[in-house]
Length: 354
Image (cartoon, rainbow, N blue to C red):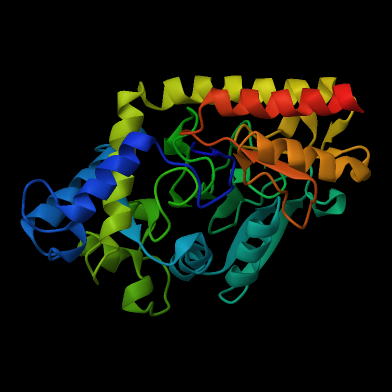
């Protein structure tokens, strides 16, 4: 029996994507060669990279709008550095809503002045700040759309006249919104797009080339774009599997359809958290993430009993991050609602017993 996988990342992928990727490792498209042994300069892999980039732009509605899709390495953590390296000339603004935005701020400070426009650190990041003003002289404003650790998510995107940059690692392709509001956004693949090893970057080309510093080639978006994500050997398996996953998203009705399913899953788990006398949520109600539900037992002494119920039910990856404790149910695109129902059943059994 396959486990109900609530892991925050690397995370669940669709079974059909896993099977297709596994087959390609054995043999890619009747080529008599494995995906992971073909040249990245071969037509077969160039076609894969081209399709992956095209699908990313299509899913986000940014085809023929002056954006470039890139697949790079180093995870979102390297993007904390690259975004500032390529865009920060004088001053940048950051909305600090969690561990990852805090780390992004640290990297940006290496390149210029950083203004923390807002922060929810005062409440251990359990809410999204809303009452703040954005300076007009920023090179860009950076935010993290979904906060995996703390379970908060932006429900609306700030309106700003300055370029907008976002880390979308844990909620990309999970809901509909206007991606054209962003000038640059990035996402580590391993939470909602594919396996660990590659990072999708989508950037408006007109914002590049404006800083005066010399940028090392490997970290230069313009060079990566000019080389079609082939400046060095790309992570072929991660790119291929991400491409398969984007095909799967389209087969499911696209982002709109998946967003509706994700909202249904979130409503189910949060409804039980609020109803059940043994549990309480961590994040503010209005800011709760559809991707990562964080919650705690009101009586910590029941943890052993609840953990045993979950283990018996085949639930995996539910332990909360050490910054929050308790539990975290990560409900990415590929997680079926059946898994959420099993978790809810375990919560109800605990309440009935205690």
